[in-house]
Length: 281
Image (cartoon, one colour):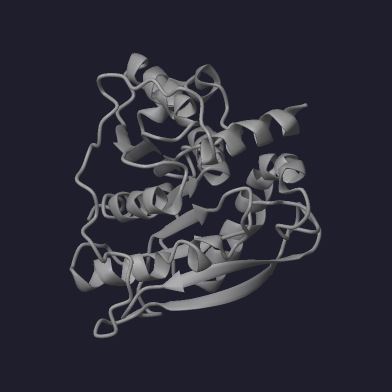
């Protein structure tokens, strides 16, 4: 039943969404990214993109993730890390293949707008066969237990293989749709691990607002909390509910309503805006 409800809600958001009601504060918090922000500029330095394999203790096999190191990467330096999560139809490659996240970041670096960071896009489908094949909605439960893999294997691997600043002040967690729900669910439950959290167009896997905000004093320790959605997205009610609860509990956050639906132009813009505002830049 949960899988059917999830699939129905997500398909509605992508196709013919239900009536959307916008409130007075459902507005952009920042101007949109400039034209061409996600297009390759050959004249600028580029970060390096690698596929790495690690042993997952919780899943019980080897899994893959994408690691982006910034232009002019210096192995003798120390870097903060952004863990960036994909949607239910994707894998560790979705942000790379569909979101061109490396291009967005390369251009931000070229414009002097970004603090140097490592970016990791793991696979949020924590099961032995983690490919996006068949009925991907049936894999929803595997996304719900990804926190064990993220906290128990992904982060330890990154921090033992890359020069990282290994504390909550230098870790961020963000994602789109299913990954947005994971970021809010896991990030707000682990404020001792992550100091920055972002939910982009979060999907029906997002915990109820009252659960997410059950301990507002812990949430107030976050350095930065971002909640966003497109104004034509049938799932906007989920993010509206999170924003409302955070506002009522007095938890400082950014509420950004973009122009668009449950689509990549919205999520690329989210990354452009979110990444500039983490790690003290």
